Image (cartoon, rainbow, N blue to C red):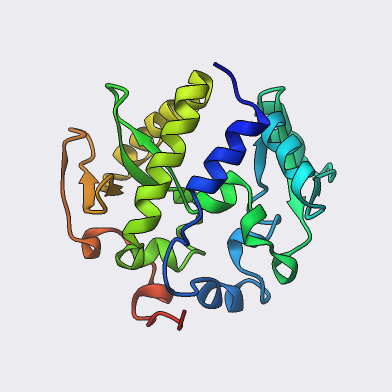
Length: 226
């Protein structure tokens, strides 16, 4: 089975919950020129496959291809699968939540797969930890979001084994990086519980979110209102 626009119609219908009841963008935006980090292509450029791109085009004019050709973008294009596209929306002021891409719905998390290829939960994109308030306060992640995240990615994995392989590879990279740092991998399990993968042994265990490495500028920040 392969990805189709209809697959994304079904995934989007299933995966709509916000990551938290709090407005985390109001915490990181002041440190990023007034724009939430996840909505700024200077920080993160959404990637979609051609079927998702076709589906988004059929629903809205919110999105356009990302055409900048700076060195970082050219490097990212070089590493992308030929069926993928870099895209950009009109900006946070024009957000249409029902037309967010899969990567926007999931941010700042990706599906974490063990070395045995078991999808056990959500791991954060660690490159953004110094800029993302929510990654430093994972206690605010809502269980509905976790449930819908898991269901959405299981639908995607069932349709496209290459998508699963890509996340399997990214999880392996995370294990190598965090082993080198001698740092716990923070996870949210499929049932919403806080978990950790220990460096070196890669043993999975329950954890308290306060065990995760947190950056000073976000440690004592109270959540913004919903």
